[in-house]
Image (cartoon, rainbow, N blue to C red):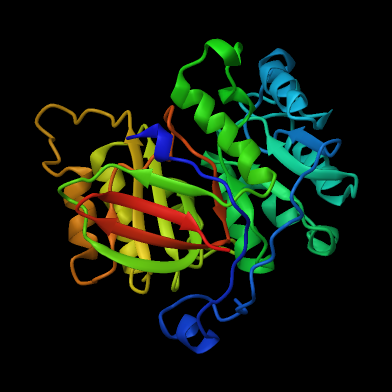
Amino acid sequence: MNRKHFLSSLVTAGVGMHSLKTLAAIGTPADVTPRKPAVPPYLKPGDIIGITCPAGYIRREEIQAAVRIMESWGFNIRIGKTVGARDYSFGGTDAERLQDLQAMMNDKSIKAVMCGRGGYGTARIIDQLDFSRFRENPKWIIGFSDITALHCHISRHLGIASLHSKMCNSFPDDFSKSDPVVQDTIMSIYQALTGKRMHYSASPDSSNRKGAARGILTGGNLSVIQSLSGTDSEIDTNGKILFLEEVGEYLYSLDRMLGTLQRSHKLDNLAGLIIGGFNRIKPDDPGEEFGRTVYDMVRERVKDFSYPVCFNFPVGHQRNNYALKCGVMHSFSVTEEGVTLKEEQ
């Protein structure tokens, strides 16, 4: 990947969605009302970013690099009560995590909420969240992995854009000495939050399926997305560009998850499909080899469709995990020369 051409700056926007009739016809819950996506206000110097832990726990010292860097961008930081709290693997009890996230969503002075880390736990509290004040005063929700549940829920019920990106536990202790790719990915958070029009590129791959499309960007962690099937947070993929990433799973588990997306018709009416990092795949048990790669699984699931597909896009549990604006209109192109994903004005 040529990092010089990876990110570019200009301004935002988004339009369009498919009809309710189409949604119901292919199995998406009929209470999903199509709406024009809403983009929260972009941040300016002096704005407050809150840090909270709706999923796994993080120690206060582990967020200090993120605090320093975001303060250097001109933002003020408000640290939530769940930072440093712990209930086994969680960032506090369910009640504590719910209260902390709710308070930050309700507080008009907070313009963005960054999650400390992923892990697991967001789905345990999401049905108790009250989004009424958030709907009136939208703000950027920032995170990935387990935070995919929030991205999907907010997109489905509110049509509000959110930011799929690295979290506090991924900020380098010494930014000036960190790898250039790490610097780029961290800076992509700043660019996205301050209203730059994002432009991404990826290297060509022989397994890519060429084509061009435009649509609202949606997606995130595959296991979280498939776990939301049949719930009040189920992802809406109709007419959208879907991106997927995963980490630490067995091949057969990945196949089962992709099968769930296929069987629930989430792959039927995509504008395009982006496959990000599928990393740290667990080895098969001896004598129980699965015999298929991630490439094989994806190709099998989308062979009956004609939309563009790309592999190895820089998103996921990896160093080159760039900030993506979920809920915003993008154009997507896959050619012999490579892949581009551009936020539209």
